[in-house]
Image (tube, protein in one colour):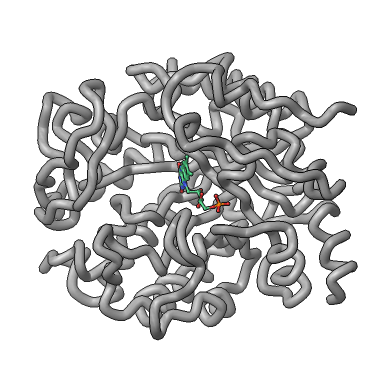
Amino acid sequence: MTDNKARTDLFSPARLGALDLSNRIVMAPLTRSRATDDGLVGDLQATYYAQRASAGLIIAEATNISMQGRGYALTPGIWTDEQVAGWKKVTDAVHAEGGKIVSQLWHVGRYSHNDLQPNGQAPVAPSAIKAEGDTYTNDGMVPVAMPRALETDEIPGIVADYVRAAENAKRAGFDGIEVHSANCYLLDQFIRDSTNKRTDRYGGSIENRTRLTQEVVEAVLGVWDAGSVGIRLSPASTSAGNTPLDSDVMATYGHLIRQLNRFNLAYLHTVEGVTGGARQMPEGIDLDVLRAEFKGAYIGNNGYDLDLAIARRAESKINAVAFGRPFIANPDLVERLRNGVPLTDAPRETYYGGGEAGLTDWPKLAA
Ligand SMILES: Cc1cc2nc3c(=O)[nH]c(=O)nc-3n(C[C@H](O)[C@H](O)[C@H](O)COP(=O)(O)O)c2cc1C
């Protein structure tokens, strides 16, 4: 495909599985930490997402499937009826503007703190190995806590929490769901051999470590048709010390992606490189090789600009492109890219927390 054709194509309707998109520009999931203590969203988020509804698809901010899945204060949930009602306002507002929106289902695993957990318990993880880094609680930033390893017989309960969240996403009027199996959260912690030291059927071999992600996908397909379900992976994520999290990324993710082909999902969405960081791959990792293993549609993300999106579309490396940070201060990102209008940069201070400021007060271009 020529660059010109690829450019036109990015702004033209496309189909990912059963999802009909008005263009191939996707809004990446962005945690904005403006939900209530009870994980409720409402009018504020309805306005925010409706402003961005010209994206071909919005992947809503990561949404906790359970209280146990929470790792940050003020992030939304989708396990109570009240939370569902809040999300219904959001999906109605996006649909009224002609947009499409899916819910990203999230369990942070070890990346949490007792203060965020039911009854002040320790966070759960594949193995009792503490993460590096801080999280945000009602008392401000604190180091993440030491997790406890999940018992084998607790795992069906976690899969059931994903199913309940998938059902709730349907009740809330979403167009689909994205299983969040990226960015070193619970499902990713099971996949990697540096965070998973289990000796049961969920640990050890690649088959075992990728089992939970597959079980979750299979279970939510009892609720949603496969064409409305996507998955997000970040094979090249590194730990805080920039060390690879898995001893054989190509073999581990190659196996997982080949297995995912069984399900005919709407799309595979990959963070290409270190999330929000470099696109350069560590030695021995080639995401295009992994991408070629996937039989369905592919959304590329991480550090894209329009030129890169055009180039990768021209080479048939992506079906759609997800932009994260550019959507924060450019609600009409699609129109700006189409018209070559310079983009506004959002200061980091606006990313997380607060109210309308930095969330819904970014102007659109004058008509
Ligand atoms: C403020 C902020 C919040 C984010 N929240 C999420 C999230 O909820 N779920 C997720 O999978 N990724 C999340 N990410 C990662 C983005 O989806 C995306 O992968 C990253 O920003 C790279 O894309 P970009 O270069 O277009 O911004 C977040 C990134 C930022 C900057």
